[in-house]
Picture: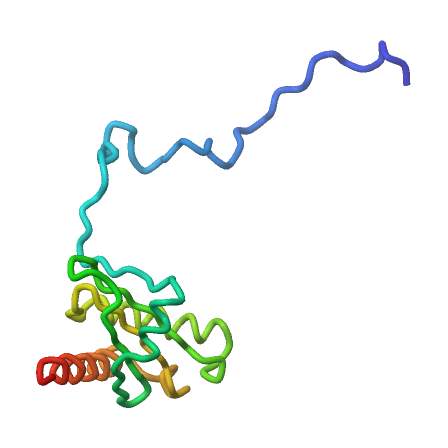
Length: 157
């Protein structure tokens, strides 16, 4: 094939592409979108993660209480003005990664509803594979009972 045999014009596409551009949203117009907020957001119900090894060592030495499929350890690991910190430990004996993550997500959801002490750290451990079958109200009842017992014992000492 020689160069002069190739047409210079490309044929027009017969139909539009099926996907809209990345910036397009067919459900609403750009005028309906709210403006992004300015500045930092106010923390509501903020719970920090436990990250540093010193905090984990303090939690290992802290007070503990076990009930049902859960065990909670608590200790003072921050300033009284800091939000509470929570860590979750789900053993491999509970199940595979998918099952462990499911239990961890459910524990996070239940923990958000609890009243936690400012400046305190909490280590929530799953000690029994039966936690996979426990429903949210059962986990909530177990966790609130443990936290109530820990805070009650704290006031006595």
